[in-house]
Length: 298
Image (tube, rainbow, N blue to C red):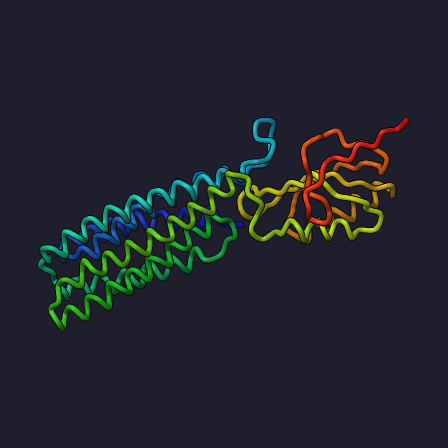
């Protein structure tokens, strides 16, 4: 995976570009361009963080991080989302004051900047579109947002050029900011769910239980736990009651789990007569919550 190199390229492009935009915004007097600049600067900063953390997240597990460094990538996404959230709120404030007293805008300059903006960001988006980490997706989403943001600015600039409706500029700025805000909040929600050890979206607990219970020789499955490292790599632990050959059972169950994107499973096997030591409730194979069976041997 060339994820981290892609991210570095994106970082440098974005940083240079956001400086270019600040000049553009000041030179043309357009809040919409300035709001894109803030957005890009936020992106650049967050991409820098992502790059650093994405590299760290590729490290192999060690004695300190026995699960590996996958969550660092999630932290990167978290910081990114917070920066974007903050940036978009600031820009909405700025645009509202722009609506109250519309700015003087150099439309031709604005059209020129917007054309450059669309082209540069399209190239950047193309450079980062391959990659499968949540972080990489977040970065690529910013790139696409930038292309859209600039396309909006371009259309707006052309409309204002012919109608002289200067209020359109801050209105566009608000549109761009609200869009960014919405996505930032959504991403934040997804990332928090990973930290809260919520079962991954893609996995259905009931379906997994059913599949494992269908394996020949499995009598019962309980104490099942699912969580995700980074939104892509999932983990599971469970207790399996069986009297069959443990090796065959483990192999089959692991294979079944791998189909569902679970890269790491810890399976505890119990024989049918054995009493389960953990006394809290567990989910039964039929999906209902059952209590621990105590088999008393006299």
